[in-house]
Amino acid sequence: MYNTGRNPDLLSFAFPGLIEEEILNIGAEQIPYMRTEEFSELVLDSERILKELIGCDDGKVIGYTASGTAAMESAVVNYASKFDKILAINGGTFGKRWKEICNYHNYSCDEFEVDFGKDINYDQLDEFINKNKYDILLCQHHETSSGQLFDLNRIAEICRRNDVNLVVDAISSFLTDPFDMAKWNIDIAILSSQKGLNLPPGLSFLVISEKALKRGFNSNNYYLDIEDNLSNFKRGQTPFSPATTLFRQLHYRLSKLKELGIGQVLQIVDENARYFREACANNNWHLSAETPSGCITGFYIDNGRKICNELIKDKIYVMPSGNERLSRISHIGLQNKEILNILIDKIKATQNKLLL
Ligand SMILES: *Cc1c(COP(=O)(O)O)cnc(C)c1O
Image 1 (cartoon, rainbow, N blue to C red):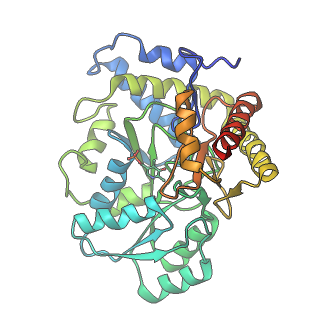
Image 2 (spheres, helix red, strand yellow):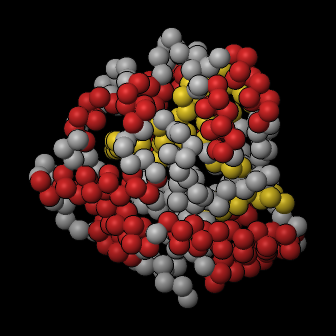
Image 3 (tube, rainbow, N blue to C red):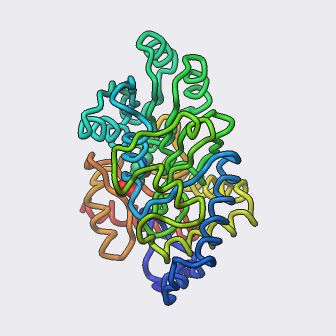
């Protein structure tokens, strides 16, 4: 069978997916002290590689020991102010989160609603932004609840023309779909360790462009304060205790990505996504997204939730969703046709069993 490392009978099609053994092994090592030159150099080298991979040569990176939502919250409270006119694109669970964060902090935020699993009507968005003169647009590249990938070429062009600052949650598209901050004039991109980076959860990042650095920040948060984090990151350190092990795993992952090239990684994700979608077509499992990201395949299947629960008994993890019929599988991490076949066969067998 496929070698999935330390526990070979576990198959994960949930985030972060199956992680390669070298990275799992780093997680099993003793933890070196982090207030050292060695750790600083590891952090600074990670920043250099990340900026290169994401197309942000002149910007800065900060990393929080926190999940992705903390980085979303940080971008809102540090980059926007109560005087800014904010618009958020809401096409599902993650888009809705922008407005919730804004409400929590008493920032006013308008929403541009997009039907679940559908692409944005870009002409309407353009008109809406032009009419209302927003300062900041908050959006996802990939709305992970449905699998829908939005077109950043179009969004970026609208922002450029209307002089709107652009904050993009690329948590579930970086390393699964082409993503380039410079090309799209993105002010801040948000990342998290447990998605495309295929690492354990616990680290999230803001990649901040030179343009955003020039615009400047507010100080509306203690732990997440961007200025404080930036001044520490400049010397490869964090204001508070970092998740040392995760940073070491991150450095290994990024070094390897640099060696392989992003093209290679995207190609593997794409091949797996295509292969699974072919099986969906053959079995009449309808896809949930109009233009799907490489990151996940969302598909409607009778008894979807029940099937997910049945598979858990065999240590096969698939992601359910709010809709009982909608299941989602991730294409991140170790995956190939052989293990996808195991999954597809298992889903079909379970589906038949439940029909009896
Ligand atoms: C996973 C995810 C997040 C962050 O969720 P956390 O559980 O806080 O890590 C944010 N946005 C998108 C698009 C995601 O897929």
